Amino acid sequence: MDPKTRDPTFEAFVDVTHPEDREQVRRAHAESMGKREGHTISHRLLMKDLSIKFVHVQIRTEFTKRRADPRNGDHAGHHGAQEGGDGSL
Image (cartoon, rainbow, N blue to C red):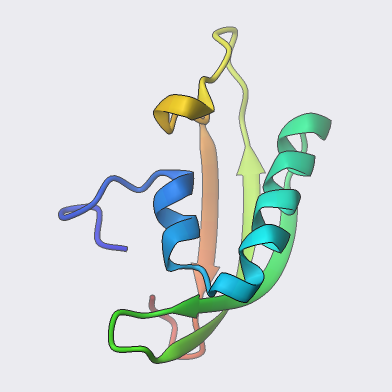
């Protein structure tokens, strides 16, 4: 995702996740938020040109005193690093 053309929200990330992997990604995210700890997950991205990239994502979640509102795409410091086979998205 290019942050210059699209807000890097969790839902924007799910949108480029392969449809067969989206539920797994949502479950991992919900578990991470519920336990208030990071997680690691490997899954696929479906690109606009229909190519598939395999990624390994490591998430670190930082919470503030203010409660995040995921309906707004607000995840209060949800940080992730991901890498495709070629080192890019």
